Length: 315
Image (tube, rainbow, N blue to C red):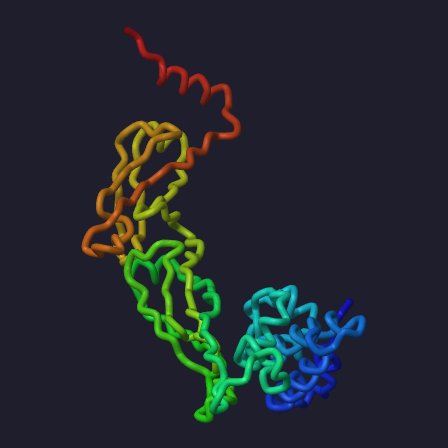
């Protein structure tokens, strides 16, 4: 069953961020299981949490407005992910209490409404709320092999909720995070920006973690610090010798002479021509040349005879 998040919050599609907050506050307090025991209130409370989770986030809201719930949940191709839209598949975490507490900023949002939940303190003091940090937010950082070979700087814009000066309200602001990619970084390298997630009055912002994902390269396959290059050769070349030209990632052309007889498992190893070592970029792995041996599909009787004569060894 599809959800209309605007209808759930009883607002129209032109609603501002302030309208969304106001609607969620009113309805969440009304349908919270602590206040409302009527059948269906718990389900309604969950729907409200999901609706607010989507519409309060500019990226998710932009995706939902343009592609609907199907695009939001199924994800959209990266080429359509413009104007801040969300390209990953969205799944609500399913904990409306978490959404509720993040919004109201505490473990006891009803303290202002009920005195029997929290004992009154002399002097009007309220119990101290222990701050907890949200779980890390992980995002993939896709890098090409050239970037990981040379190193580079990547600028990434994030949108996050920031507390206003009054300490009670918040707003969405953009921030540019800069990542200095070091030569030799491996797949899976994690780059952490501490406490750059959404801010809340009684929570510690989550860390944002980017995880390196290496893109496929048209010529090389990377294995740890080694680069593997596959050359296509004929049977004639394998038996009589040949040279292989390899265009390296730093722009050099290597002409590698092969005088050995090449069998299917033969490899040519060039030391120091692979990837830089991340802990010591002055050192490099190896370039390993493997061979894709192509046999002829057909041979004439004459050619077979000539090959047989050439390969006949007499003691």
